[in-house]
Amino acid sequence: MSTNLKVTLGVLAVAMAVVVGIVVVNQNSAPTTAAAEALVRPDSHRLSTAADGKTTVVEFLDFECESCLAAYPGVEKLRAEYGDRITYVVRYFPIASHPNAFNAAHAAEAAARQGKFEQMYKKLFDTQNTWGHNQQPQGAVFEGYAQEMGLDMAKFKADVASAEVAARVKADAADGENLGVRGTPTFFINGKQYTDQPTYAGLKAAIDASLAS
Image (cartoon, rainbow, N blue to C red; front, side, top):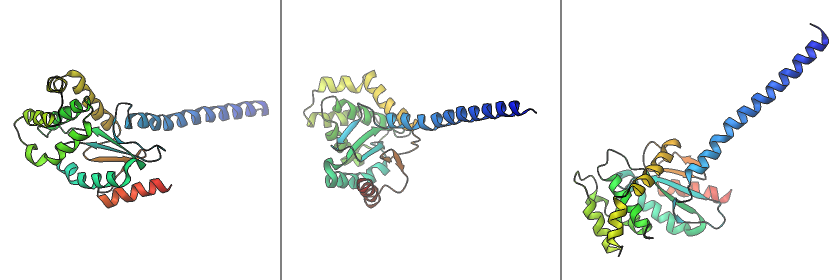
């Protein structure tokens, strides 16, 4: 093999390595960007917003999930403690095996369209032991909650039954599936899935570490 041929082949090998490297970098970086976009959408429900944007906690939940209910008191304690020092985002992830999970999510989204998402979020968890895991549809119960909140009932009922609300709930669940959510509650802190038990102490330690970084 001549010296010129060796040099030519060497240049081609380096060029190919650069091209492959660019492809690998793009493949590795693209999912990160996509995941960030899927984690918090412009219309995602924020229960608090940190001015500095330093720490964002995202919870994928099912209002009929017992584990979500078990985590709920700790979550509320954390929200009260940190306030607007953190951004807290709630995403829908209703489980098909829960008979009223989708109905509850639709009720929450319908309430959100009248500015009452947080109130319905709290009401559904505070009363889960009353309506949860009942094979009968609990729409009338949720309408009662909406009435207590002073919502426009005609609009609430129309929104609960609307294709737009159904699509909104399904879009959250689809994002969750694409992000690797397999059950509820699933938490993400600054884009990283929290894999320990979602206790108050565990979540607090992860939030504190994020704020201190």
